[in-house]
Image 1 (cartoon, rainbow, N blue to C red):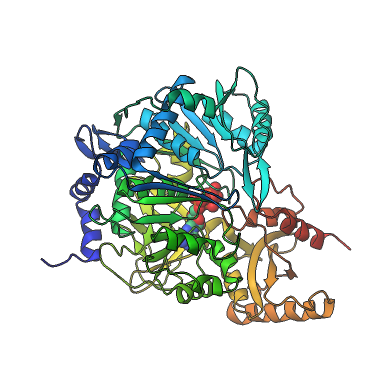
Image 2: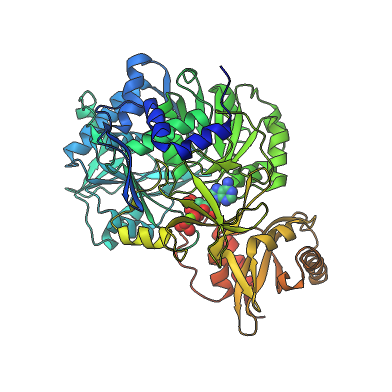
Length: 638
Ligand code: ATP
Ligand code: MG
C-alpha cells in the first residue's frame, strides 16, 4: 500500500469533509453515533457530529482504565514546593469521580459553570475532568489574574461553584490566592453558591462559613463515590476560556464536546505522531499553564485522549537550575514536548551544559507556539537539542493548530520562520486588506482568513454573545463571510505560510502603512539587538510615529548618553537601508526588559498606552511590572 501524501490528505479534508471527519471521529468513543457530520445551515454557527453523544472525560480517562489501568496518566511536578506525584489512569479515574461527587454535593448540575482559579496542581486537572464528566462547563481563569480581572470573569461566567487553592508559588515566593478571590467575589455582582478550597499548606485561607468548603474534608467523604460519565450531545458546551487579551478586551471562547474531542484525537495522531497503537508508555510535556488554551488542549485533554501520560509542571524553566525540564524529559521518557519561544529565549541565556547533561533520546520533537519563532531562537534550540523544532500557529479560538507540519501523515521539512502549511480542515486564504480580493499568487502579503465552516474543535461562539461572534470574527471583510484571524500572512511558492504580525499592529506614518513587526525584524538585524518592541505613537504632525524599545545584547556602556546615541543612530540606519526612511523609528530607547504577559506575549498595547500617556488598562497578567515602569521613566520629560 502506498502511503498517502499530506497533499492528498489535505485535499480530501476540503473536498470530502464529511467522509474525512467521519473517519477521524472513529478515534474517539461515542455512546450514540452521530447522524450528521457537520450542520452548517446557519453560518457562521456550525455544529459538528450532530445527534451523537459522547464525553470528554470518558475518552480521556475511563476508556484507558479499561485497558491499562496502571499506566501513568497524570504526572504532577512542582519545582516550587519540591513535590512530585504520579497518578495512574486508575488513580486519576478515582480522583476525578471524587471531585465530580464533591462538585455535585455543592450543587453543581449539568450545564452549570464551574470557575477554576488555580495553580498548576493535580486538583485543577481533576476539576476540569470532573466538570467534563458531569456535563458542567468549566471556565479556567489563569491563576496570575488579580481581583479586578477575576471579578469580571466571575460576572461573565456566573459560576455555581468556584474551585481554588490557598496559594500558587513562583520563583520560591508564595502567592496567596484566597485574598484575591475574596476581593474578586466582593467586587462581582454574581455570587457563587460555594467556593471549594484546596489547601496546599502554603498560605492562610480565611474560610468564610457557609460559603467556603474544604476540599480535603469533602474528599474524605467522597473518595470512593462512583460518578458515571453523563453522555452529552456532541454540541454541548464543554468549556469557556478567555483569549489572552493582547490586543484588547478578552473574548470568552466557547467550545463544544464532540468536535473538540475528535479534533484533539486527530491532532495527536497527525500532528504529534501519537497513534492509538503507539501511545502506551509515551509521555507528553507541555510547559504552558491550564489558564491558556495550550493547557486545555495539550496538558489536559489531548494527551489523555490519546492515552499517553501528561506532565503538569509548576515552576520556572530555570529553577532549581536550567536543567529542570530536561531532567523531567529523561526521567519520564518524554516523547513530545510543547513550549513557547519565550521560554526557549530564557533557556538560551543559560549555560548549555544543562542541556548536555541529560539523556534526551526519548524526545522526538519540540513544538513551539504562541508567538513568532525567530530564526536565532529556532536555530539555537534546534542545534542544542538535535531534534526537530516544529513551529505551530493557532489561536485560543481554534483550539488546535491552523498552520504547522503534519509529520504524522507525511514527514516534511520545516522552514525556519514559517509555522508551515494549512492543517487539514482549514481553508486558509490570504486577502488583500483593502479590496478583500484573494491573493492567489506567492509572496503577497495579506490578511489571513479561513473559509467556513471551521473544522471541528474551533470555537462555537462567544459565550452568551452570538452577535459579537458574528460581528467580530466573521464580518470584518466587506461582502464576505470569512473567519478573520487578524494576523498578517504571506505564502511562499511551496505553500508555506509566514505570519507577519497582527493586523492591528499596523501604524500609519504620514500616510504610509507600516507593520510594527516588520520594523522590529529589521531592527533585530542589528548585531547588538537581543529583543525589540516597536509601537505606533500618536503624533500631531505625522498621524503616528514608530518608537522602538530595545534590549541590547551587550548593554555595557549604554548608560553613557554618547554610546546610547551612537547605537540609536546605527539602528536607525539599519531600518533606513532595509525598509526605507519612512519606517525609521522616531526614537530608540534601551531597556533592561520588555513588558510581556505571563504567557510570553509582548504587551505592545501597554507600551503604546504609556507612550501616549494613557492608562495601560488591565496589566494583571504582566510578567514584570518593572519593565513597563522603566519605559514610563524613560518617557518622562527631563
Ligand atoms: P487577544 O485575541 O485577546 O488579543 P491573543 O490573540 O494574544 O489575545 P491567543 O489566542 O492566546 O490570544 O493568541 C493567538 C495569537 O498568537 C495569534 O493570533 C497570533 O497572533 C499569535 N501566534 C500564535 N502562534 C503563533 C506562531 N506560531 N507564530 C506567530 N504568531 C503566533
Ligand atoms: Mg487573538
